[in-house]
Length: 277
Image 1 (spheres, one colour):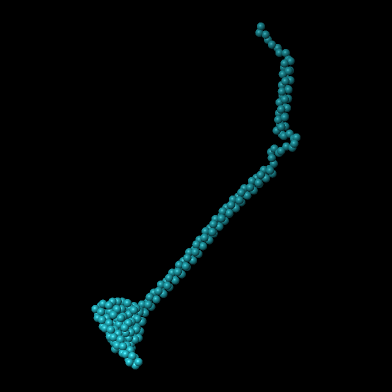
Image 2 (cartoon, rainbow, N blue to C red):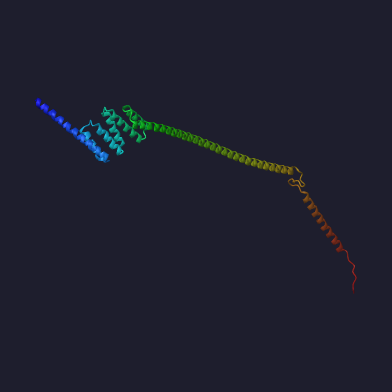
């Protein structure tokens, strides 16, 4: 039984050694492919190495480098994070945080880049490249904040101008509305004045008509009050014209009678004549 256990342990050890050796070979092949810019082949080789030996932080880091070269920055950042987490080596940690900072610089996430470079410098304060990138990230972050403040100020100014324009437009609309109401009132006042003038004219015309009617009534009344030359006769009374006519007729009749009488007198008196013979 003890022999079987020793054989099994030996077999496991040999198998693990073989896997590590194969993983090591794959990492070397991946490095060659990466150097030749054969990034697809390098990515495949690094993944196989990690599958065989998850402790190969160098494979994780180099896979992150390959993904970075193909601009798959999100996947690269994950591999760098697994590298710094899986190792106790400060140099590896420093390199992983340094490259995480570079990815944040690509995304212009300067605040995150500053924090990543800080972590890298804590693990290796003497790395000149990290110190340079850290200073650059801080400068870009400050510039970004100033631009954001300027943009915010501009936005605030635009909002303020927009609010002022809205207030001015509202005031102008209210002013125009008031002017419109004033014009309507003025037009209404003019209409009322015109209506009043018309009513006044109609009243004056009515007064004139009443005055004319009054004068006419007075004239009629004056005519009635004025003594008439020929006052109306009473029933059965003969008018002076009729009396005059009767007198004239009586005189004429009397004259005719007188003429008749005189004619008879002349006729009855013999007339003396002288013959011619």
